Length: 179
Length: 409
Image 1 (cartoon, rainbow over the protein chains, first blue to last red):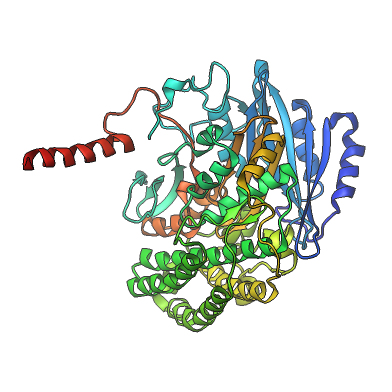
Image 2: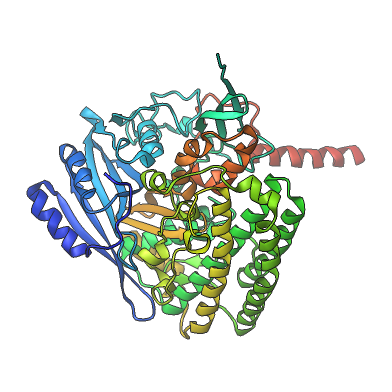
């Protein structure tokens, strides 16, 4: 795999159709967000919002690499009760004007099996995000070499997962009101 | 047999402007390994937002960073506008672009000055600081503040560009075209500055792609990426911007500190051109969709969903993701990813084979904003008696006044 961004872009709609044809029912959600602006109020760029099950996550990421080298932005997420919902924010086709397709890939990881394959081997830029999600939500990333804390202090009680909304999350006495 | 030593730089160090720790493994003077440990300035801003409504969070997001505060605000606002389907009047989009480019000029000037300071080129540092004042004056003229401008709001901006202000901005553009060039030449033509920055802290193009480097750091490694081109927003829909890469100017991209310096310097000129085009094309009309904040808040209370805002901040792409829950007035969750968060992952690569003395320069070369990168929360509940909270400080301050009054009486 060459580490280069391709010079040409694929239209968002064509990419969406290709992904649909390839993954079919495994795509639990496929939506397009259009971003308009400028004097003519034309669509300037588009984002795809996709959801897959944890077992399709890694094949989906690998499939994206067939279109362009993926640019990784961040993992956002929330504790939704039985699951931890993670959103991977990625970009493809960054070389042409208006050609970039932003991809938000959602994966719901059940709390009963809080583990997901790491993408560090293909996208080492994801290291901080995976470590952050690990310390904040308690999701284990299979294949992530460095599993030490990244933002939390060294003496942090790792039983407390700051972004969780259940019993493992911070309680009011953990929060110090500064003013 | 060679022995290696581990030397920590930071979290507090004279060569660093903000707290971060780099554990460097040294063989003599050469860095053979590096491990970066952030976390010293996590403030819990994303957590604090969960108890605030979106309008309050505008002002919270502004305080993520003092330099690119408008970038963070706009990114947050665009994420909300994305999920709630809000539109912005064209004049509002143009004014947003103006502030973005003023901020870029400010950020790059500040960085260029500080980079000179880091290598001990103090006269250039002072020149850089002097140059920076003019853009801060213009920002103050527009918004009333030198930092944390409070200018953006949902569906537009809060302040208009008056004809007098437009005139002052055009004068500023002329001033920089005239006065910035001597600064550029003093540094770029200086053999010592050249020697200190050339070949130092190299990040190759392939590595920049793999490690998802962003902004001037990525462009200095030769990547032609800039969100203003690849996914235009606001007035960039009408004003094309081309990524600035060193190979177009020096024949090749080396991805070293000098290339990062050069890219930022050239981006200052680019920003001046964009500012001029924005002023030329500034359309008439309203600058905000809805001035009544209560109405905005009521409509946001009904909105539900996740929105993603992504813009080209001075240091690279800034990403905000926001989730609102229908019926809930507060922000349900919010994720901020500042450019430094992406670029800091590449630090260990940049350190390889360099000298210890270059470490602060390499750290500074990505224009790190540690406060941007780290925002997380809370204490560990055990409490730290050495930390004085604002309330305690206020209490002490007042007590001192009362004590003095008591003594006088």
